Amino acid sequence: MKHLLATDGLDAATATAVLDTADELKRTLLGREVKKLPTLRGRTVVTMFYENSTRTRVSFEIAGKWMSADVINVSAASSSVGKGESLRDTALTLAAAGADCVIVRHPASGAAHRLSGWLAEAGTAVVNAGDGTHEHPTQALLDAATLRERLGSLAGRRIAIVGDVLHSRVARSNVHLLNTLGAEVVLVAPPTLLPPGVRSLPVTVSHDLDSELPALDAVMMLRVQAERMNGGDAPGGNFFPSAREYSISYGLNERRMSLLPEHAVVLHPGPMLRGMEIGSAVADSPRSAITEQVRNGVHVRMAVLYHLLAGEEEPTT
Ligand code: CP
Image 1: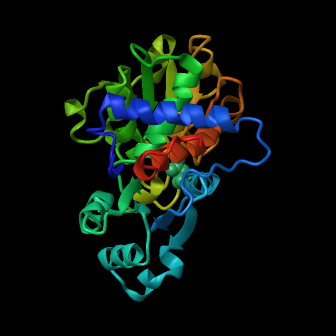
Image 2 (image 1 turned 180 degrees about the horizontal axis):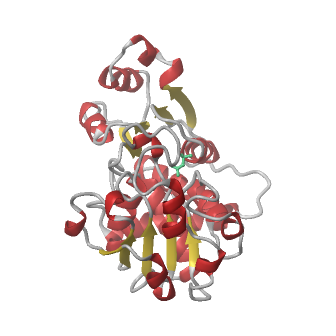
């Protein structure tokens, strides 16, 4: 693997290798007081975030540090981006300064792909940490790691992705990866929050959450992305259905959770809008794997860095 830009096109063998490495790293570090492996000593990882993040940015930083890489965080607000420097010039500057890997989050779909082209000559690896409404591949990998832990194999499992699919890079990356790993995906959303090309995706579509719940192995709730809706600067600001209608029809509350089979898992990529797309009692219930998703995010991102940067080294030595 030279870059990780998308799960669309990521083959099952590569995805499974990353997930297996993440499992191995998790087992190795379990219960250790000092979580430090020498695997990426001497490697330099730069995170470059042009959009807000808590989980992705922090877990990439922890992942790099736990593998002994030097990790440098660049934020658009405090860098020369604020003086008008382009994405290309910023990336070339980071590569010239010695970055072996650039992890980028950007509001423009396709930004990570462009970056990988500009950095090809320098040999710098690029990881897409979320580009516009396009993809967020490490989120899908950590979701798959969490589902494997709870359910075993994903082959034949039925997984619903619920809510604002239109604006969700998490949904897109999960559709492709879950499909590659053999799961059946159903998108549950109001017609206004589905993307135009939805019929060309390997999914079924439903507008009725209640009728889908009894047959699911997992339900993945999505954040309503008011910031990507025209004129919508707050949940419920300016989209259809309204926040109240959305919550009534698509919110996962306790009544709806009781319609799920006993073994079914509840996921949410975060940040959560409690009371809107998910109730607090559901988010904090034993069914919820939301905290495990965050924990697994570190091991999955360690595994991604390992597969991009480690060469012949074993992941845990
Ligand atoms: N799931 C996710 O990408 O969260 P952050 O925006 O906090 O990184």
